[in-house]
Length: 209
Ligand code: 13P
Image 1 (cartoon, rainbow, N blue to C red):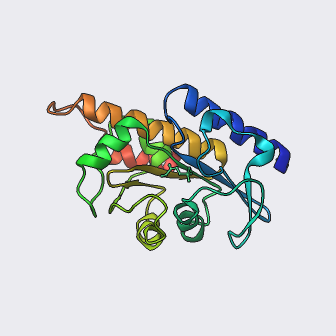
Image 2 (image 1 turned 45 degrees about the horizontal axis):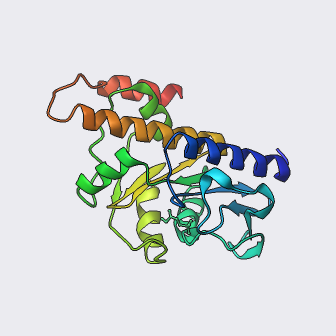
């Protein structure tokens, strides 16, 4: 995919997330790895109204070289790219149900979203660690996220929201959507005892996907 096509796809996927309520106001940011650097959404931009030509362009060392001022969460995205060679894109949202779980969950533990459905397991994986709260844009979050991301494709930031990586931009967006829906199911079923996928079923999904 050319950089122009990647810019167009990022803008289209971001608008789709916004239109369907996965992001409100100027919340959330999205980045994608290029051959020689990264694209990331500009700070204070609305995911529903991005201009592909004005996306922030970073070089391979995450320095801003072109476009509007980058998201203040570059550290959050960098933590994933530096820790996970398989990460080709990172999506951060404040989507409601995943953020609700991020307010309920114990820091340092795995988020309480059980393996109820196959697509959550296939897209997000087995582990969803909960990282301590940091002020948005606080560079101190980088080592905390990097430590958690070593064994996980996605994390929940306490009282803030999900950060999800994927092999491609589309994969990362799909995973962020599956995470939000799994969080919604987990909250809908709170207090009930739903059937969960068994450990062999989870293993089977992880091996096959
Ligand atoms: P930016 O507008 O700087 O990307 O920050 C938005 C956000 O979601 C903070 O967590």
